[in-house]
Length: 143
Ligand code: RTP
Ligand code: MG
Image 1 (cartoon, rainbow, N blue to C red):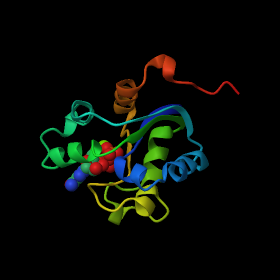
Image 2 (cartoon, rainbow, N blue to C red):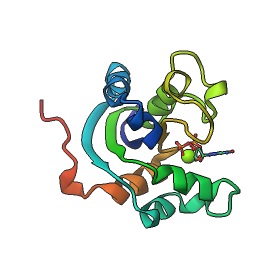
Image 3 (spheres, rainbow, N blue to C red):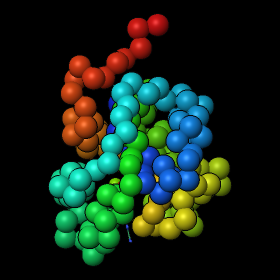
Image 4 (cartoon, helix red, strand yellow):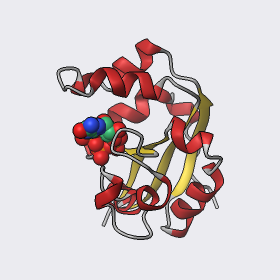
């Protein structure tokens, strides 16, 4: 398996619940290393740009309103098979269908406010990481 990078967002609901550290701990226990991180409050333009693929979906306006409702914590994660591993620890999009012990099962309440985002493939991971971080802001481990 290859070492990959993926983009993770701790969404406004989970930041409001004060569980950033608990979620980071899940990443670390899964062998995912944080190689870049930043807290920010997304503007409407940033949220619309990030979720542009969902522009035509019925939930788009609600999604943008939610993602701009408070600060988010954004990070790039690195590790073996990081994209799939990250989605595994996040759990299903709908927390009601998320496996026990996953982040969404434990910290999310609804499909609209589901605690975390994770890239869904190598191409989106690359685009999404570049959306938030310049190459020199990414700090791979040297030891
Ligand atoms: P994410 O992109 O946030 O990691 O989540 P995902 O891949 O599991 O879900 P995706 O299909 O990409 O949808 C993006 C986000 O839009 C909201 N959503 N709401 N009401 C709905 O039916 C619905 N479907 C999706 C969720 O916040 C989802 O994470
Ligand atoms: Mg998605």
